[in-house]
Each structure stands twice: as structure tokens, then as C-alpha cells.
Image (cartoon, rainbow over all chains, first blue to last red; front, side, top):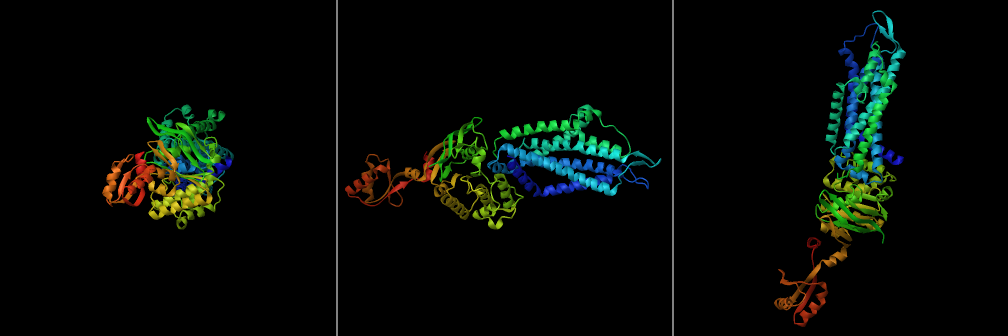
Length: 276
Length: 299
């Protein structure tokens, strides 16, 4: 079974790498990540002085937050097309008449989404971090009027590490949202449109909810983590929500979301008649 | 002979519509089985049920003597299929399309891809994107997909769709050669009766979801004989003599002057002797057959 899933995943990546849109999407993520690091400090009126240049982790926070937003859309588009695209083209029948089970096929798609999510995550990380290290300075954050250290280097790095960890699982959950929606329709266009609508609508609506309610929605954690990091990298202080920390909600909420999406998507796929 | 495919009471109901009813197919090893029926008769639905793409409402499917549901992986290693229109990734080349299926199939050497593309006549265009292929080339690619893993049993749904006469002939030769040389069994679904007649040695006919005939092609052809065509002199006397005869359903003169007699094949020798005995010179006496199409429509 593992061998068959592994081969199917290899096939999935062969398809992915051959799609021009994949490279276009990577370029888009790259450009927007850099633009965020270049332009956000300017729009926010931050100026470099002789004593204080941009902090690398502040630039990283800008870049990673924006880059990840774009990567989220990319992940949603690709995961939304994963099943619906096979139905759309009819290639699902070619694959399901091979010696593979529907479970293996489904698992291969899940592994593909997880791997793609990890690749995009690492890609955004490297782009934003590379530019941030080149353009900004590491080390403590100085107060440029009193020349005292406001935040130590170790403090900021610890928060950057934490923000990085908190963000991955919610990002991955978006991929599984795409997989679920991809099984609701046989048109990849509709699937992507529905997935994007659900995501955008969900993000908007969750913004109106109370903090406590928002914490139960996986969409909350991306902005939350990088907003905190920004405060620290700008020299301010803010506490991580003790509730979220104590109960590791940034792990349990997205994992529970994935755990809800996966069986629902598989149930639909397993019982569906293939008439494509 | 071993039945490589057997369906028992296979039924599919969509709401109130019974698309396939109590289908009992039997395909023997080495058969070139033509699965005939008009559009919408249930051929593709039957194939999809056999290949477990759709769930049957009732009945079961056995391949190589084993129930497909419980032995899917093992069975599908020996099966290839082209169901309805060929499906492909248009942004990939034929080689890449087949590579994906090779990975999914497992145990197929990479060298098999150019080999099978040569067989179906796509050797010179194998690295072109499928998007640029003509309808006929896409159909050939679909057949290559079905034959990729050197299957023992191949399902081809309307395999000559979109092919020109040369292409149809080529694919027919490929099918017959694989059957003859390697003993590959083919189940070919089609609404083109003439094509099936030229390719297959065993036929199942489906009409409104029901199997109406299943037999060897030669046996079916013998059942299509429904009378005699006689060149007799004098023709008018022959017609007059035959008209009053028992067991003769109809007698008429055809445009070329021959006499068409509708009767059972068992009466041929007796009628010949009767005409000759009554002074009619019989210079030609041939069985008159319905075409497979006429036979199908009469069922």
C-alpha cells in the first residue's frame, strides 16, 4: 500500500511540475513576499537611521505574513483542483481502473497536499528570510532616542520561532479545505471558486467574532502569530494568549479541522459513482 | 475454456430508470468479445460497473474466476480499460501521460511507454503535448493507455471513435494481433455492428439494458439466414410453384431477376429438389442473410 501511494504521489508531482501555472504561482508568491518586505515598512512610515536599521525579523514578519497569504490562495487553488480536475478531464477513470484502491488514491492526494503545503511554506520562509537577512540587521531592538536595548535578540528569535510553528498547521488545514471542496463538485473551476469563496467569506466573518470564538477557527492563527512577532520585532511587548498556549489551540484546532475534513472528503469520494 | 469475465445478475437503477437489468455476460479467455448495442442501451454503464467505477444496484462481477470487489488489486493488474472518451492531461506529452499511469500501475518498465506508443502509431509524436493531438491521435493514446500494462483482459469502449478508415484498420490489426500472438482477451463495446463483425468472434447484444443475444459470431450469423435467393428459369413458373408451398413465408422477385424466398434453412434442399423436379432450371441457390444490424433490430 505504501509503495502504491508513493508512486501515485510521484505521479501527482509530475503533473504539478508540468503545469505552467505552478511556476507562475511561485513567481507571484516570490514577488509579493518581497514587495511586502520592501513596501510595508515604507507605508508604515518606518525610516532607517544611522543607529537603527530595519530589523531582519520585522521584515521577515511582513514578508512571511503576506507571502503566506498568497501561498494560502495558491494552496487552495491547487488542492481545489486535485479531485475535481481529475473528474473534469475524466482522468479519474484512467487511474481508478489501475491496481489501486480509492483509499490509496485519496491518501496520495492528501500526501501531495501536505507536501505541497510544506514546500510552499519553506519557499515563503526562505524568500522572506533571505531578503530580511540581507536587508535588515539581526540583534536587539534599540530605542533610537535613549539608546537602550528595548528587546533582546534572543527574545525576538524565540517569538519568530514560535510564530513559525504556530502558522504551519492552520496553513495545512487550508489545503484540506480545498480537498473537501474538490470532492463536492466535478468541475475544477467551480471547486476552486467555491474553495476561495468559503475561505474569503470565512476569513471576513471570523474577523467579526469575539476573540474566544475566533480561536476555535483555524483561520485565526496565521495573522495572530505574525502580528505578535511584529510587535516584538518593533520593540514592543505583547503576551501570547495564555489560553492558546496552555491548550495548544494552534495545534488542536487545525488538527481537529483536518480530522473533520478528511473523513468527510473521503466519504464523498468513496461512495461516488465515477461517470466522468 | 476459462471465463475471464462473468457478470451475474448485474443491475443498475438510476432512480426509476433501469439502465442495466440482470446482465449475465460471459467472456472466455482469448475471446474478442463484441458488446453491441445502440447509444444509451447500457453498454458504458455495464463497463463502469464491471470496472467498479460505479456501484451496481444488484449482481456481482467475477474476473479470472474471482470476485472483483474482494480481489480488486490482483485482478486489475491483469486488466486494461478505455472507458468512453479517452481522458488525458492536455498539458503533458503522451509519454508523460503514460508515465503517470505507469506509476499508478506498478511493475511496468519505463521502456514499455515508447514501445506501446509505437504499436498504436504515435511513435513520431510521443513527446508532443496531447493538447496538439487530433481526435484520432487522442483515441490512439487512449488505446495505448489501456494496453500499457500488458493486460490479459482489455475493455475498449467505442475504440474506433474519431479514427479515419486507415486508423480503424490499424487498430483492428493491433487488437487481432495481440489476441492471436499473446492471447489477450478483448471486450469491445460498440454501436458499429459492422466493425464488431469484422473484429470479434463472440458477441453480446444489449438493448434497453437487457442482454438479448450472447453467442459466437458464426452462430449468430447462421441465425441471420432467413431465406433463399434463387436464380431460376423460368422465374414466373418458379414463383408460382413456390407460392403455394408449405413453410414458405414470402416469395418475391428482386430487381436483379432473382427470386427471394423467406423460409427456414431446413427447407433449402427440399425446395431445390422441388423446383428441379417441376422443370425449373436452378442455376444459383444461395442463403439470404440479414445484416447484423437487421438481425439486431429484429430482436
